[in-house]
Image (tube, rainbow, N blue to C red; front, top):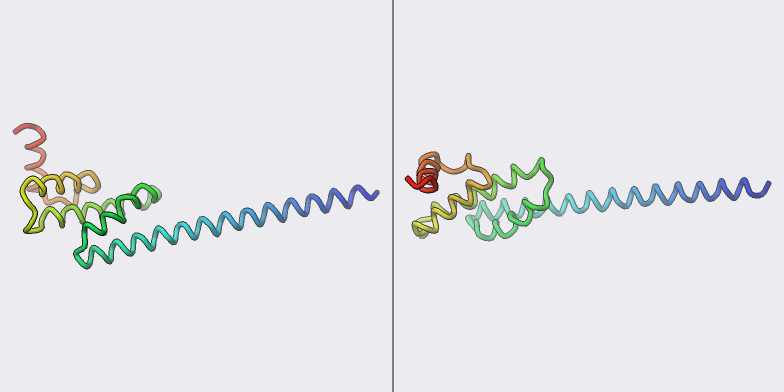
Length: 126
């Protein structure tokens, strides 16, 4: 008769451990998610300060880590940075072209249509 309470205690302990483990995983997930959001916010602040190179240092690795729902948004930020770098007055011709090409990889809608046409003509050999 003493074995039934022992099994009951074992089951209760296993259930408690499972609940604690699930809670720990949930807290870790939320913490990791909040860190990604903080990094994204920091990058957006850098973009607002016209520090696009620094923002790219944060956004490029972040793009690999975020979920599918966030990839388009982060890709848009990356594209904005490349377009801003391409449009800088100090940017040289070939450098501008490379930046516009990079921008198109992440979000082609951010690149001005006339530039898209010229890049398409260049890649098609026209």
